[in-house]
Amino acid sequence: MRSDSVTNPKAMKQFLWVMALIVGITTPIGFEALSVPLVAAQAPVAQAHFTFPDTPAAKQLQAWLAAFNSGDRATIQAFVKKVMTEDTPPGFVDQTIQMRNQMGGFDFQKVEQSTDVRFAALAKARVGGQLFRITVDVERAEPHRIASIWFEPVPRTTSTRRRRD
Image (cartoon, rainbow, N blue to C red; front, side, top):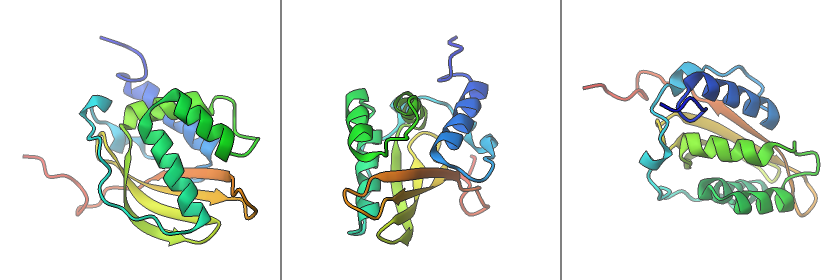
């Protein structure tokens, strides 16, 4: 059995904590909700129909989603170089790819906030089905570079828990 972060829940929790710090999560994460089989190949490929608003922040998050869901290192590197601010941590691309491999991508579900400089929406991880609130802040001036991305797990309530048969 592999002991790397793809099959090791402890390593995944450590990675997600580091990712949270890098991308600016401001609240502690309850990782217990993420104890699911970590096989990205189980993830569906198609994004459910979701319409992003026509704002700079929403467009940047939509572009990030396309790069993230691709899982392709060159695509993600090009996105970071073009769209992220210069102070993006050097390990951001590797951590993004690792997160993509573990989550299988995201499908956006619902807009929570939309302005020119901030966009927040609920997204569902393709592996495990965990809901996340993903928030992006962009610079006011064009080209509206991404200043921060936050990932906040949404606690499962009785109505959002999957039934166990």
